[in-house]
Image: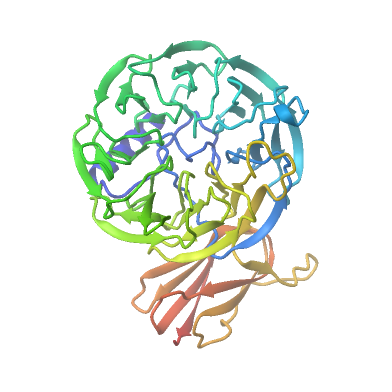
Length: 513
């Protein structure tokens, strides 16, 4: 049955190639964010809407900081490891945590017994087994109770953006000795390979059918391997770097900074034929290890840096599925670096953080800044996660030698507040008129739900086209207040609609600028 579902999805992708769907991957945990990059194709794409306004729900002081993650298990808990290099602090172990997503409470702590940082991207499989790597070269495997199942010393630093798994449950990692390893989920080393000048200690990406492993070599070639580690084909490029590759439903591969043309975003098919190359419109463009992301309509997002007089700035840029330019957003802070693999939510909002201690950002699907929160001197290196309730979780650190980190795990949610939620008071479904109305920038909308469940809250224009989704998540019974910020929307009549099971209520609002 699962094979039939997968074939149907791939068939749909071939009919409508720009439309993307999530590919079932039964060996991964059935959770909102089971691995770094979200899925084995490293799309960075969430099936849920992240926060469109920024309210910090809670923070946790993990003193050794966070480099990767977190990831989310089927039990809803967050799993995350620490960042600091502890040889000079006197501590002999690093840590891995289970965190309650409701309030940030630490549920348990696993001690690695080694002072090296836990940098490698994490992964949770369908059996509740958590995999993570360390700078020490150890691959650690624990269960969701924090008990060690097995570990393996690869002999050198594991610091890739994300590890991966195939449809049989085997695990794939690379290390700083340039070898690619395959392990069974039970801990048996199946094989290791090292081709050409070695494999970059970066991410491994799986083809949509689960039969091909893609990894970048130090010779700047892209290696397509069979599941036994043998070479299927070598795709020769001149500019491809160590960042994770992204693959769409049709098997097209996306990467920067180019194949035939330097300074380009490139799309190739699974045989290595170039679909298109989009040349970045700046002669002084520079690229980082940040991977591209692809949304559900096939739009591509990526980051790069540009020189401007005596300094340089970072940008997020987007093209459509066919390589046609959409928009560019340039960050205001000079010398800002975006190393994080990009996250893109259900409606195309892009989330990323500065690796130069400035801000964490949300950029709309139209290339406009929705919000930013200051990192207060800390930095973001490797992704984050979006939960099923729309909460965005990010990890930060102050550097590899810092051991007094504060607010290093942060939960961010929409500006939706519960008002007067008395569990003993009788409640009915209610959707109030927005206030102010008319309004010229933002307005408040109150609503009530008498039982817990999934709430969807959308804005439509006068012809009935969906403008944005304000909410799409589970909420407890109670009274709520949601803020709608109009941004660059033109003046006019709009409608807001609350949907909760069979209950649907729609009201009119007027935007007057």
